[in-house]
Image 1 (cartoon, rainbow, N blue to C red):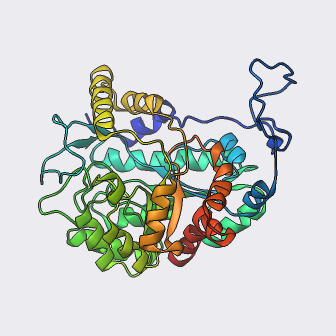
Image 2 (cartoon, rainbow, N blue to C red; image 1 turned 45 degrees about the vertical axis):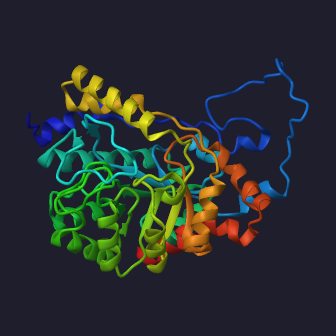
Image 3 (cartoon, rainbow, N blue to C red; image 1 turned 60 degrees about the vertical axis):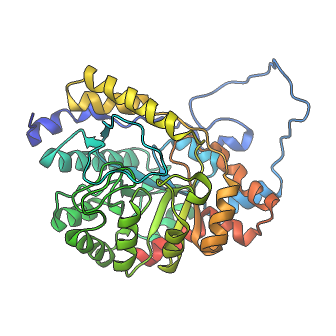
Length: 400
């Protein structure tokens, strides 16, 4: 089915961002939630004797740092305030369905030219869907400008943060640009500052760790995309890219690149995660690899849950907007914990100047504990400031 631009626009309300509205400001100073709650709760049901209400040196240091979540799946202002997260790279893009029949070992390379993922929208509607997503984020930021602002350059980030607000950088999670550099430039004009060549599905010009083209890697147009991104000021993200696409991008790029959310393959054994060679390559460009702090699940669990969910939703919702909204409603909220083992490995391989952090989820109040975790583990205050945000800020400054 083909939707006209007018029909797409008229149905926009059916594809809302899930979001909370914040009524207060920094009430967390008093131990209260900054939104949704009012009153005085005085009872207790299970008092814990070792509970500490301590805003000691770690908390004070965390407040002084600029903390960057390099890959946010959904902006929740309340939780960002509670976690003292100052900057988010906010991912947006069209929804994709998992269609692979057989379970693949995460350490095995996927077959070339075999589709495992399909975007819900196609053709012009795919581009229009992305524009709608950009518009939703811009309207959200405008509606809550007291707390958050979309930023387009690194100096704007510091201005917004020093003003006590959250800076949001817009990222296109997959390179659906209709094989057109003009569309890429149009997305830039609309506010996109980070792009991943591929997400789960391969694009025509770049493949992912989950789906390979034949031949794999960047094609000639893909190399032009990377050059154009470097020229106009769009940061290239390698998080979901295949090793072939990563290596090809590293050969072409003349500015730093980023991996917005990754684990390390030498620990997980999964092709989804970065190899040591690619980590070194990212560092060589001056870039940064951001360790994913989401709670891990086995590859079998991820595969089975996703396949069951996507098959069921595809049968229940023929309208692509209903299907997209159903996927959002079912999105799993992962807890966020600091993966020290992966951080240590990435630092040892890439260097302290080339490692950052990301959540991949809206559940980020725990970020205010990350500073203490890093320092207690043996990292210096300077190291912690780099990992928590300064490394990503440097890359944004050198790219935008």
